[in-house]
Image (cartoon, rainbow, N blue to C red; front, side, top):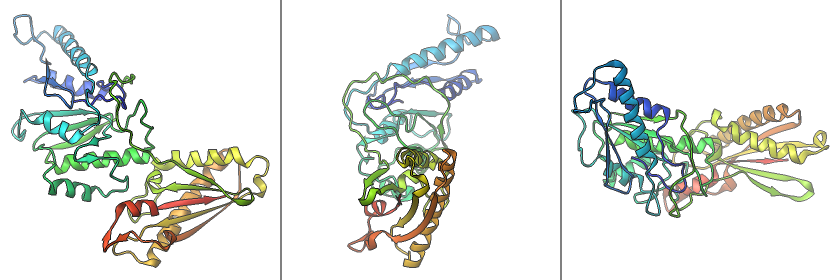
Length: 357
């Protein structure tokens, strides 16, 4: 099943997806590929099993391989022809529609390939309304309480193309792509699937075929603010850094963010780098159970981690400046507790690192 919107590359089978289909075709029982666009119930059926002209299974090894490749080419062409005909993507509903005719797959061998950016903008999961710091367990709990999880018992589910964008949809920083993968794998697992995985193998990326206008999901960027006396402040949200909850370990996926910060500085330091100094200050939210001292400690540890990574990135540019780190604790002494309840949207705005130079 493919979404095929105007804000993602044209749907196509990746090397990994094609290999999965080849394995099905070569199996003793063979199999069929049912191919559909997420908003449609119309299905193109491609028999993957190598057959002779009379319908009998081909056993000659050389001819068998040729027939399988022909069948895979047919499936690939059918996938590439899919394109969205409606505005907005409702991926939860699309998954449900894809598996509905087949029911529970517990006692069968059924695989669902979801070829999609995963950037759902309609229905039960509109990612424009969900922060990138949303706890996966909470997200799944909310969907489950509303009986909105797709019926996937026994299914083997493979996501392909998650986070890949085109058209007017901004590119997703790696930490946000990682979060998107966690969301869909969490939803898939909670839906009872036998297995859930992400296929990141190479694909032939082509411009989208769809022309229907699609909603855009805003993507946070490093914010630059010019201050007095030639100083600048860079505000880096936690979604761009990707710290895990209650952790100060800067994940490898944050390297692109840190490098972009270093690039901004390199272009602005000019000849005055020896006179420059950098101060990194971390801030946190105040979730239930947290303490002022704990937030102060965590914010300092996160500032230390960013300062260390930034120092390394600048040195690779041949720039060595003094960098200090500080913990600002709870951001501006505000609170993520609203009317007695934890507000994740407010907490997401509070978690950040500010870099003054």
